Image (cartoon, rainbow, N blue to C red; front, top):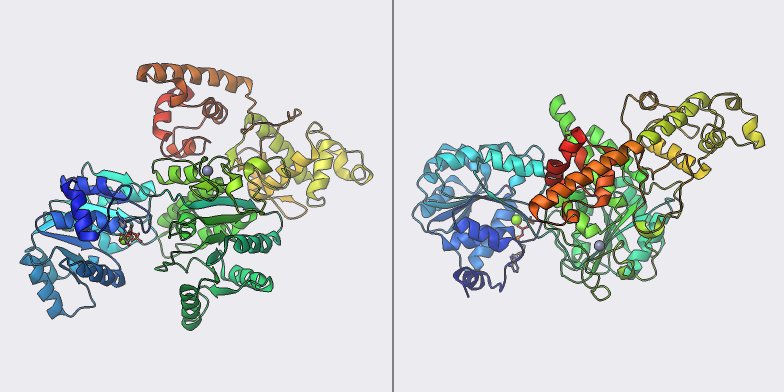
Length: 637
Ligand SMILES: Nc1ncnc2c1ncn2[C@@H]1O[C@H](COP(=O)(O)OP(=O)(O)OP(=O)(O)O)[C@@H](O)[C@H]1O
Ligand SMILES: [Mg+2]
Ligand SMILES: [Zn+2]
């Protein structure tokens, strides 16, 4: 056994490293700067604690949470490791004594809160410490984009420079690229190892249940809890929904307690304690619940409402099955619920200056979009999440025995909870396509934009007199009595989309309503709708592909794309570029990109920006840059 593994066993009693740990430890020992991104509970502490023991000198750990510092230090001391902390909870005398211990090499790990560096006394003492490693925990606090910005964290780059620390390692569970970038820049790290690891949770079954009527939520939630067992967590977006969900579950005979920010401290801690001490309870909570709650045997996490980001979703869903036994994570999804999140976005960040506020809202909107894409994902959900975080992509284990190994509703509907009809996108594609958006928000093709123009002008002419269905019938040129009587029939709108089905038209009108182009039960055009009608804005709709021709019946997994003549031409050029690139690299063409991706590129023709490319189906954080390199020149032709 090598020395590092031996130390792991000797000091911590663990026989093997978790994903990512070894790589980080080795890099630190080699003297390389590190940014380690791993989810909550994946074992980030060990990544700096083990090198701390193997290096000469003292590892200084910056940590923002005073409460957690004490726990960490206590557990290190139990293992016989010389560790201590300095923060505002200690008086000046105690702080001085501990800093002296560190300066004299009597400590291996010293935890400090970031604001300590502001104080002259502590700063002077710090300069006498033989620092081997400067470790920064919860490093997302450096970034405005993190959920937890701390001004003191922004000084840490200067601190590291002035203390001339030989090694810097930063850790966080927040995986967005912007945050990672801010960490590297703010800490002035050169050529750091940036690793993302440990996001795969292979005992979880991930599923999304499309909700058509609100009363389906309590029914599904009850069924899931009855099958999966307790303890279970139901997350809601608002306090009101918490109360409602808990009421519905209680009425169905399920014992549920409520936890949210609107309750007084006593009720909250009562709920939390009950949930902590009992295994037969359901807790219905907002995201206020969960900080520091670590119940290993949660069997099921249900999201009553869609959360604002995949980060938030996975953090919350990931509280299921910490014990490694099979557990179920289910999102009850209807697109309408995104409005609550939009509201949070519009009203968030009110303490920020206007510019920063707008930038923040923009970022949040992107995150919400990614969450909606997850809800409509038609491929492996585990893979989608890993791709989002930038971890190595793995899919469900289709060979695994029932209930064991990673599974999701798309790959393995059979591994879901017995008796609950989990209608995966793949299975539900044909069902009720009219009212339920079945795909991700996407750019429209030229032909589709023309159809949208026709539909919006009919809405404008109807002036709020007609229902969605009635407008659809006018567009189709229906001869039914109540349609023929309407003055709209005299207009240009009558029958201009006669080849489209009523169902598709109603679906499209609904999608335009969700997008904010129309408003009301008897829809009228909004300002956005007017802009869209004149094609001043580029719409992205959550609607399946639609066209004036008769659509062929669908089969197989992916909806076929009918390319326009122009797209067909671009598609050919893209294929040529793929062929050349594949030859250059000595790989098969499909390794570069699938036909499906090329079709999407040919149809959507994204502009140069990375974000545009990320909107294309099949393009993710992992492949966006290589794809742009090969195919952007063709599109810019
Ligand atoms: N290699 C390992 N083998 C077994 N258990 C491990 C290993 N590494 C860490 N652990 C355990 O995993 C648990 C979580 O570790 P840790 O507190 O470091 O998580 P974290 O990544 O810092 O999470 P958070 O984001 O919540 O701070 C701890 O109980 C730790 O002892
Ligand atoms: Mg930690
Ligand atoms: Zn899967």
